[in-house]
Length: 364
Image (cartoon, rainbow, N blue to C red; front, side, top):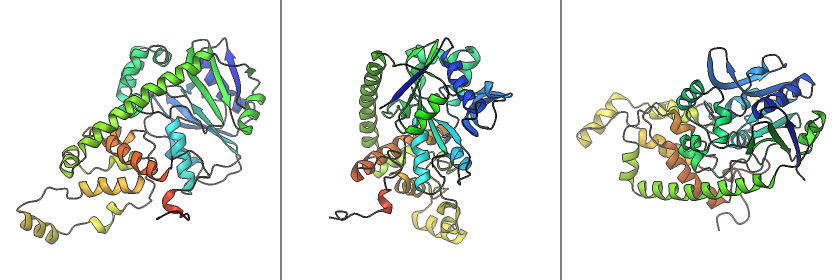
């Protein structure tokens, strides 16, 4: 049964910040991985705190993510340290974090406490910075004013997994109240932390459940429309080529992808290091070739490698200097593959990756 708790008589942002600070000051954890601003920028970046000092800079509810923080959380927890570490992540980051643990890129054990944020969507970095500079209380405004959420990314518009279901503790943002912040714990270690933090037990209003259902329905309709549009666009190789026609082969999308974890990418090896004579022969055969040569192969290979694990965070599109909607066709291919295998990335840490398991009925 879910345990709910609340901070009252504080702004929602201050309450969330105070809760995280308490975990450190009361020695309930040894380390806190969470977004915070720096003295030089208002853009929240992942930080690792080991004391309550400077935790006034924490911004866990900010509707922005410079990149999918699962990659940095995995670095902090690359091996078991025996330290109690809490990681504050958005739902798509949690799912990527769990997938990385399955791939032995990090350790999620009893010492790791996952704190999730109910996510209304993220803004692109530039949009967020412009907004926060105009309105210092922009985060609260974002949760209160639906019009401000019109600027969230396309991937977020179609995201139906905005509740952090696999978190030990969730910070609730639905049914937003300026002077109250709610928390929910489903796991035993999450419940234990909430009890030790001396939060007041209480149940949220029914309006919260209605708001979740309404948003989920809206997101499902948007997702359906998005997938239909992109599937029509990439129904032929010509359509796919038109989408990626301006690709610079910078591979920013690969670098931004939280589940593209290979230490050595095949596209950085001699396999795709075409020698001059090969290029000249290809050019002679076709009366000219476009360079770089391997943009199509790059994107198709990436789709094959990570479609089962794509969490739909949309960071690949955000990282593209040409504004190519990379996330659109990755989400479309991921939807098909994940449905084919009945697999949902980040759903369960015990659930085996399809390509790494073989059942009695597989292949029939």
